[in-house]
Amino acid sequence: MVLQPKYHLERTRALLTLFVTVLCIIGLSGEPALTEDQAEQTTSGGGSGDRQSSPELIAQGQRIFRFDTFGDEQLWTDTLRLHEVVEKNVDPTTALSVGLKVDADVLPPGILQKVDLKSAATTVALLKMNAIVGIQAEVDANNHITRLGVTCALCHSTVDDAVMAGIGHRKDGWPNRDLNVGAIIALSPALTADQKAVYSSWGPGKYDPRYNQDGKNTPLVIPPAYGLAQIKNETYTAEGPLSYWNAYVAVTQMGGQGNFTDARLKIDVKHSPDLVTPKLPALRAYQHSLPTPRPPAGTFDAGAAKRGLTVFNQSCLRCHVDTTNTDNNAGTLHPPSDTGMDGAYAARTANKAYRTTPLRGLWQHPPYFHDGSSATLEAVVEHYNRVQDLKLSADQRADLVQFLKSL
Image (cartoon, rainbow, N blue to C red; front, top):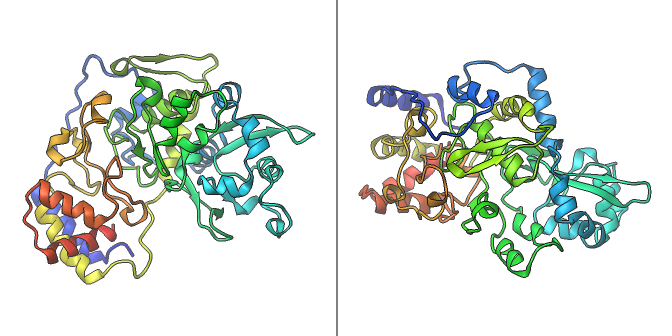
């Protein structure tokens, strides 16, 4: 259980009493050019759940999320030449150490007891079985990797460790906070020593989606991809709806062969054929189908969470409004000074500000804030108690933490 029903009822009553949101959508010059799919999402409330996706569309989206590279092999194979490194030097033990995950459901029974986890040949065999989450590879008859690419699941899926650490059943939408993307990219023989140093500085669970655009380095915590159905704008800086960000990442970060244009960021990328845009509706449908995981039993104090709800209603509702827990659905953004956040990343974005992050599955994905600057929910509450001068007592802070753990 997330909260007992009476907790939800109390909170709903408080919200209805305190807030009536009027949303005005105004067309502004200089906004990003949207695909037909993105425009549809914007006008329908940004994926507010007002229409039900068909099971067929969701299943199609799952295949795209897990297995579609959008043609990004041109980056990972032709440019970065990571297929060479993986084939020669990356054994399963090394792969697991940088946060890569293995899908146990595609492994033959007992296979792990029969193979050498210190051999790169075993990694090639796992790729041939399509067992490494988020990586697609073509392997020829001589067990040479000829093409290698990545999918959405690389960063936004993990496993439940049912077999051993890093090997288990898929958990789509859960951010892979073990994944050291920078360390993986830094294996490329095509990079300079300076570039490798930047990538190696990111650490597990972080990624900088602007570094290849502006050359600056302020990596972000990889966010969850679940609980998005009611959220209008994705990303910490709310630059666009979910399909906008899917297109941005697929084209400018993964290296997919698709179209993406945003005049605000001075980005205009076009490919023919476009292997990204036609897939955005199904991808969004699948992401919208991923529920927020409930906290495991016994991980929070229900009595304290009930008291914490009262503290939350008194101290946090100015920004964390309605059932989405974000005022950004009504268009609100906050300058970094409002929240005491470092403004370096915001300055690199179109909006120069941060959205109020929706509160979903908080128990599951520390560290917190866009830059991971708070390791625990206790640290988050302490931060806002100081920055917002909330004057919460130690008991109130402790109760609020238990409430946040219950979300």
